[in-house]
Image (spheres, rainbow, N blue to C red):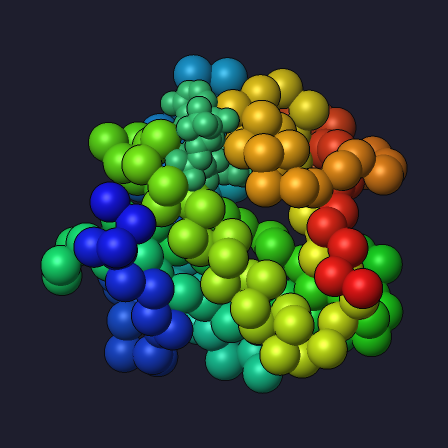
Length: 174
Ligand SMILES: CC(C)(COP(=O)(O)OP(=O)(O)OC[C@H]1O[C@@H](n2cnc3c(N)ncnc32)[C@H](O)[C@@H]1OP(=O)(O)O)[C@@H](O)C(=O)NCCC(=O)NCCS
């Protein structure tokens, strides 16, 4: 599977494809754990076209699609500098979102996306990669551990009106 998956950086014209994959993967991942109201609130405030456009235009963030042929099967959002959602510093890169369509889980698409994050972080000479993951998202935590990340802290995360705990994990590059 990995050699048929291409990872490409997004262009601004791909905004609606980004909205589609963001909404679909977020719904597939979290619908069963949250109320319909909180899911709707989160999706509307985070994946509306204005917010996504601002994120795409930020020069300290990058988005990548994982493509199987022409189909978008996953995506990655990375941030550095002030675009990071917390602890901004000049030595780290944040993996803010890494999402793969449910029908593609377990086929190493996530691994290929994470390798892209490592490649960019090395190119930009960062010391480490970090991310936040919901403490009950065991599949993602397993995936991160497999990819060499280790837990170093916790922070609170708001999903609609619900406050949840994220584990912070990091991957040292130096
Ligand atoms: C987490 C995620 C990005 C991993 O991507 P992926 O392409 O499925 O993962 P890979 O195939 O590269 O790696 C597989 C590893 O991840 C874990 N994993 C992936 N899918 C799994 C599944 N359906 N059930 C259990 N473990 C799974 C396992 O540890 C697995 O290792 P193994 O193949 O040796 O058993 C993907 O499952 C996903 O998009 N999940 C939903 C979104 C999400 O939770 N994102 C992270 C938010 S912080």
